[in-house]
Image (tube, rainbow, N blue to C red; front, side):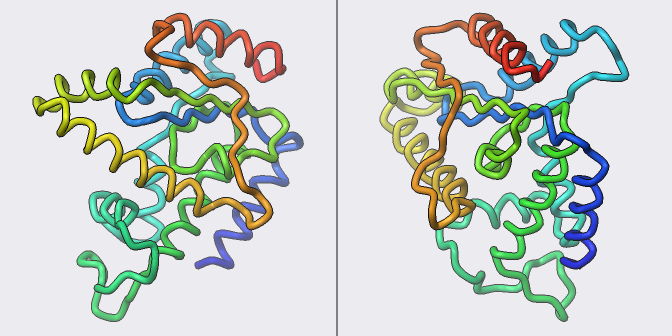
Length: 224
């Protein structure tokens, strides 16, 4: 399987004379990354105004394609990625036959191949899944991070989830920690940080303002 996937990735890279363009969006829990990615893609396509050159935003598609490769149900894939222990899994995945045993390194490898393929093909806004790490070397790329103070995010999440402010804080810290560990698992040993081109404080800027500045930055960097 890995031989096939590596050949497919090399083929995709060969087809693209210049990898990208791609925009990655990283977000802290409570910052509306999904809405940002969706609206950003709409603005980009409105600016380009050419169906043949239209962009798309990708998030759950990554999990869906990866789960197809591994023959795992997307819900089970999501559970694997949220596992607190990043070592070999201790149980056989329910959707596998008894012949198969899966560990998280294979899951991450498949996701890496899927994300890399989409980033190289270009015209995509990638939301999370370590995409900012996996596409750092692509010249035609823009890496955006959405953040906000913890109390501000807790207020948002407490309303959204109908839980107390303190419960929301605990939930946010847990999700942020999971996302950071998953992202950092893709970092090369020589890397010690992720570089973002733009970081927005969601408590200070409106969604439209952040999207407008991102489109301008993408234009300046010749992504559009």
